[in-house]
Length: 535
Image 1 (cartoon, one colour):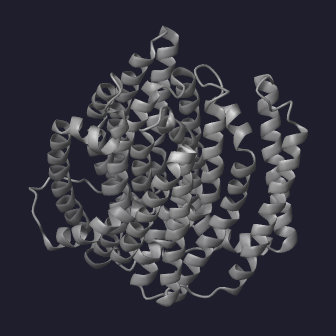
Image 2 (image 1 turned 120 degrees about the horizontal axis):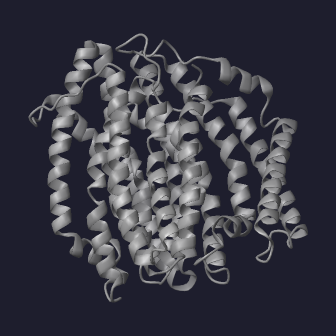
């Protein structure tokens, strides 16, 4: 299967999840707006979600996947199964102890870490603590699920792991629909959503567990033991967790700072949901597919293949994310108005704030995606320390910029800090890869990048004037059908113009696309059963 086809397999599942996420956020915005319960839920959910990215997805996609792939290559399926069981025993025991400790300390954690600005607001602090207490066990399910997803990705079985997150949105949409039908108040909606998050974690874990069994690996529980393989995993995982979850670390910091201002936490969350669509569809797909492919190429000594994989991944990410970034910058307000502006979501206050945040996130989007394309170049070589150092520097940049801008700009200042930190991190990762000789010079890629940027600028200029021409149709008083039709037509027209400009300027060509779609990426995946397809 070609690299682009693998990206598409993961992206299709992620796209479904993110599309359902839009539906979830639209219903949540209508039910809760940017009020106190919305702030409390988003702050409470940010905490276990950050831990999930730090100690599950980030760490295991970076540390577990190369080691699991090595076990398959060196010791076959039995060795891979034994390694998985060793990790499972240690991971489950550690997660159980962590969850118990966090549940007991939740009031202190919310007061001093998650949302210090809520501490002096009657009712808001207590609600956040209770919601976080309900949702934190979600971490156990998602961490174990991330381990099994890493196993599936190593076996090149991408779809089940990509589709599983969609069930979080399916369940939460069901909760919101039930709340609307029965006329529940905001307080009851918040608690219903929290129990829904926990239920979704159990469902997602069940999906990947079944997929792993169908792939021929049945994981049993082993008594926790620090074997050499587990020690190696932990040495790699700690810095990888910080690196892989850098965006989430910055978001957690942003949430803590934003808690000092009413509605800021939920405004950041609503904007984050929209820009997560291109970030997830392109960036996550590239990161998931590139790491095991790059690991295999390096383990087999195929440096030409490794360099080609990295260059084609960057080419693909820029080709897809530059127009998305331009559209978010120019059309943020019409998009927010279409997606959220109804019910408790106030047009005169919520829309301008969320739109400003979204536009700034758009400028940082290419950096966030490039980070996901650059870090596998380190992780596949079992170097998790260097990107961790760069991540720490970017966190410092984020904190300093956010604290400087928040008093004058409010929530948009936090978005600026996040975007600046993202670009600093991406540039440092690229510079070190080049310095070490791990980034092959690719003349066609270097020629295409400025032409793709030019194509995105042309598209942004056209959207800018088109948005003003159709101001009445996309304005606050316009009927929903007219508004939706106009916004979608502008987006489709902008995308068509971008692709035309990209091909006309030489930023893209059919030969490039044809080669990427047709080319394979080395030998067939190691599998434990010859016949079982992706579930």
